[in-house]
Amino acid sequence: MKLAILSRSLRCYSTRRLREAAVDQGHDVKVLNTLRFTIDLREKAPDLYFRSKPLSHYDAILPRIGASITYYGAAVVRQFEQMDVYTPNTANGIIGSRDKLRALQILSRHDLGIPHTTFVRDRSDVLPAIERIGGAPVIIKILEGTQGVGVILAETTKVAEAIIETLQTAKQNVLIQRFVKESKGRDVRAFVIGDSVVAAMRRTAQGEEFRSNVHRGGSVEALTLDSAYQDTAVRAAQILGLRVAGVDMLEGKDGPQVMEVNSSPGLEGIERATNLDIAGAVVEYISNQVKFPEIDLRQRLTVSKGYGVADVLIPEGSQLVDQTIEGSGLRERDVVVLNLHRGTSVISNPKGTRVIEAGDRLLCYGKLDSMRDMIPAKQRKKRKVRAEQLDPNAEPSTEAPRS
Image (cartoon, rainbow, N blue to C red; front, side, top):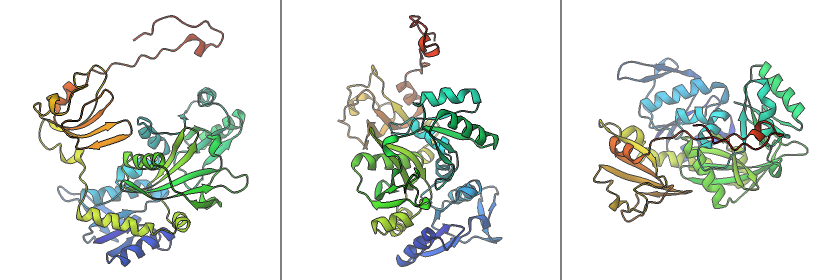
């Protein structure tokens, strides 16, 4: 395999280890400075130049895109994608995970633990937002900080207001996040490769510092995660389109809370804590994918007119409830069930004898008109706002909600 590691620093631990691992496994590997690429766009011929010379063919790339060059780095990765070069982390995955707000927005629609977070712009909305997530203390984060930079613990509401006003004056967009007290100064890093957690560590802050990042002096220890934490880490990475990721989680009283998903996770802390060859596992995964690549169904199966992929939620009262897949008539309507999601379980290529239940999500490929008929017309969610929510002294409202 001919592999390109996209990195601006050959000397940093992670890049060096990945290169060593690739050489040890007999691969042809080069470390290429991401900023020295030129993207060349012509009809039917997406191409790349490196140091102003035509780029030779590569089987795969491994992006190590720093926060300061996210936009350009993602554009280079996207160009490799257009040239059918394999990457474990897509450009969309890198961009989506790098922006903390965007990542939480994507994760929030799934059955996945995340700290209650709010995003405000107008000063008058700050106090209500803080109260809505449980009041001070709160965590304030700038959207694209890394290694603990731009993460502040505000002990009181007044302090939080002052910090947010200062950051917004400096044209920084900030998140306000519930402070998970039971996990103060401690978090979990799970290293995900493909559909598995290959290593995990607990990071603990030193002294009065609440940020546990290794770059801030945090100590690390190897950790064996239970299935709930492993499943959460893998799902978070995959939802964001990443096959190699570091998933940071808080140990909340109700289970794992995904704090952040890193598309370029560092190797130094976790390799030293676990004594595992994680760099070797990353390179081996990429090599296996080059030999037998996964296919993005949504891109590949929409080539026939009128056909596509859809994720169908089966509601209460659907005619499909209590029917087997085989007896549901879906096949006769030119619809094939590829995956069945039930709660936190995913059943791939479910048998025809599998009974469909209310609340199941079916990943289907087939005739779009047939799949549209499976989905009831969307109704606007009615949201009843009680008078006492607006005025604590008001009498409870008995008025029916307006549509």
